[in-house]
Image (cartoon, rainbow over all chains, first blue to last red; front, side, top):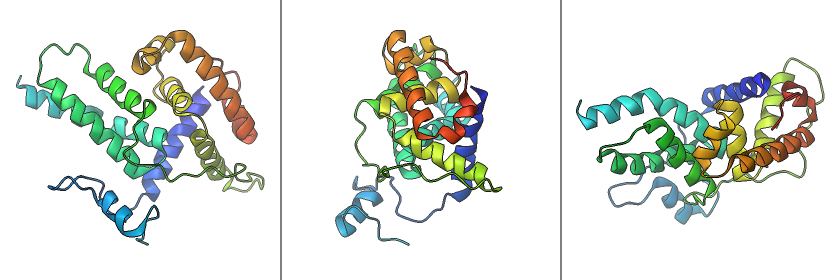
Length: 50
Length: 168
């Protein structure tokens, strides 16, 4: 059980260390459109940022 | 104390933990962020009313139920591969590879199985608490846990030893 907990902790820690700020914000804008929705309409399902 | 202040203090105290759980559920930072934000929207509406006895249990119910019951605003881009990545090699990168493999395997569980595993073995909740969070019976939690662990053992046998002895 502790092994799973440790593994999950490591997954989270690793994800945080590799997280980047690239890509659009998924926060809704004043118009209610998210950055994610905007890139979807622009690029389809795949993001176009590096 | 002012309800707004209480809410800010609650979010300040619990926000990071919610985000970590949401990441384990979704496997994606933006999806996790959206899930947490959706949860906060519901929480804020409910917070205006008095009488919330256990806000932590309440917010957990929102988060997990929204994940399991059709949170679809953002389709997850994770496409399961035919097989988990090869973890052989035994070098010092092995531990990191194992984590990635477990993470990939976690995403191949059904949403409810994933939620049960995160609730039981990451949040360390009892079966009763996990059942409350998901709005299901403890029998369902037990059966879903058993199936999920079996699936993880099949998918990531190299790291299965880390949770040997874990029973639903």
